[in-house]
Amino acid sequence: MQKTAICLGALLISLTTVGAEAQSGPRRDEFFWLGEINKASAVINTDEGLLDRAVAPRIAAGLRTVLHAGEKPGGKRPTLVITFEPLLIEAAGVEATLLHAGRSSQDMLATVRAAIIRDEVLTLAEQLRKTTATMVALAEKHAGTIVPNYTNGVAAQPNSYGHYLLGHVAGLQRDAERLRQFYARLDRSPMGTTVLNGTSWPLNRPRMANYLGFAATVDNAYDAAQISATEIPVELGAVTTAIALHAGAYIQDVMVQYAQPRPWILLQEGGGNTYVSSAMPQKRNPGLLNDVRGQASSVVSLGIGRAIQAHNIPPGMNDAKNVGDNAAVIGGATRVLAGWDRILGALAVNPERALEELNSDWTASQEVADVLMRQYKLPFRVGHHFASEVVDYAKAHDIRPSDFPYQEARRIFSTTLTEMKVAGGELPLSEAEFRAALDPVAIIRHRATAGGPQPAEMARMVAEAKQSLAEQDQWIQARRQRIDGALAELDRDFARLGTP
Image (cartoon, rainbow, N blue to C red):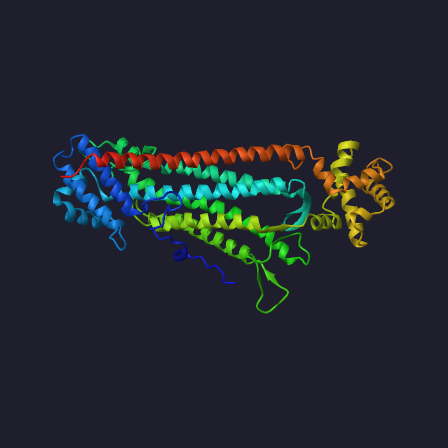
């Protein structure tokens, strides 16, 4: 199976497809957004008397020529103001530069970058929602599947696999929250701030923002292109890094099972999930896990790189602003989430094998100490010491929890009281109570803590997760509709300028 090697070059999405999932119609690359800015400038400045109404139709016609030519196969789609403008002059004459009143490459390109990243962020938000929804559905399915959970790489306690998954869902919900908060700071138009201190032209910045689908304007003209434009990639890197870290942690938890001769969770074989070793016929390597983990590591590298590139430079420098690099970070995180979603769909969980592992180890031993303290008021450390001695004896004599001799437990309890100088007598737990305290299924069913794996709490948390997913979907759709609606309104108003 060919391995996936992700590097900056591989992650760097061609800007002809940036935001392709977010909308149909024209490619929303730099060329597209430079065109939209020019269309909005023509409409607004004509309406407000900054552009002669007699000249506007000829400029509009030239702009249409440039934009239509750019949509043709092999058509020129310049990405910079200084390479876009000569095409406009060629199509409409030098008077077309009247559109440049109060504008600069600084505010125009800052706006272009924000608009492109905005589309990419909504695509990432949608994939984050999809992957989280898959995990919630799997959690609901496995609410009653009891499995080992691990701390410090060692089997620690029994848990519902559904509860474990909801723990990861909580992390993804925070990722979604961070993404929405980031979007709110991103969704502000820098247009009209010119280089860094505004312009003597009375530009209508709010109307420009509305036409381009932004919720507001960047308030401070110096901040617009000099501070926030460099800060945005750094925050973007932090958000995507958090997503990648969550994915990597989950994948590693599954990966450790492949070191076991009889794992309780694996990927279904075939379909690109696993592949046979070229030398060892018994091996089924988890290629999908390796690939997605590698992608997540690359996203972390690129995400941290956003801060490194923005570090120790004067305000306004372009080091961290490259829209291709920034889109690559988002595109990489989107692919990690899509791969994670595929992993969740390919899981093969064996509840019987998981329960067998729990019953062959002593992951339920803490419950013995808890029961002794909760029901019989024995200090926890005494109960803990007793349970630890039981485990030591069991491992020394290769005894499973279900087979541990009750009389031996009574002896160890008496010895523990003597060693710890605690007054008392016989083990207060009956044999039935002792066995029940070691039953992983009963332990999970009788948990009482809010947020625990017991059935009532699982049902509550699943319902709340579904509600959160519905709200995320509404948030995404509302922002896409606002952008699409704003651009449609701009097209209608631009058409009013007519032809010369």
